[in-house]
Image (cartoon, rainbow, N blue to C red; front, side, top):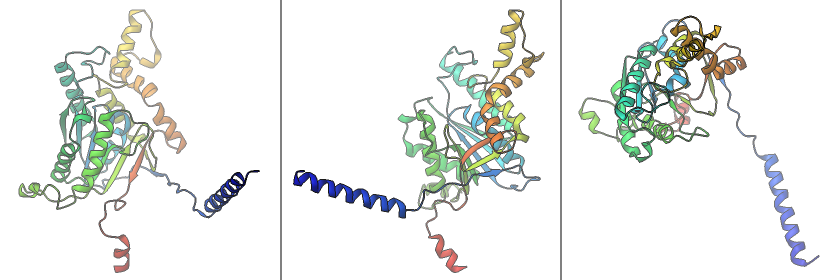
Length: 320
């Protein structure tokens, strides 16, 4: 063997040996415990504010409407924010694009209906162009969300996960990054001090429910009691998203061919609701089955005090 090859072999063996020992000594990767959150009797969250933030009118209905409804039932005052105007959707959910004006108005009506169904006190439309939020200044979006967090005195937020896997939609990851930054900055007196001249105060968001296509699941919420509201929230999205009035349209299509499906019942409302239960809630049923409940939603949950603290928590522990 050539001397240089022999030396290279020894060096490689040494490196591999050190890596092997390091792997044996290194702590195992952290495993996040998944908490199952169930409905709580009464209104333990009375006086708190919930800010649900979505890019499009169907995001919250599909991913988190059961949880939003649950938290509002437990005392939160709910607010719904939609970042885009959904102008690239279609006006009536038939898969055929309408004019931009028809699309915007149709989705705006749907979003207002989602807010009503879930029990939100108010909704806000930021009106950015659909699929174009990558063109928007991130600091502008952060500033608008900071204003809403302070204005509404938000305690808890629900929205897209800024660390979510497999996300392709620029509207989703832009609003997610903006919301995460806004939650931290809203509690700082240094950021946007002109808000204070208008009577607002710094506001620290306490906890966050982040959803994603493939989330890092740390919390599963039992939404079995809220499933009818989730169905109605999905149905409210006539102009986009799976569900809407798909059931009644399928029922009419079959009737024209002198056919019927027992699943779709004898009226349009039953057809829409049963269609959504059968085809739009498959994941929620399967997730619920894993955790011993009927229906569930999954989140990357960030608990109070888990991030954004400027002081080392060991200081407070030492003081106690």
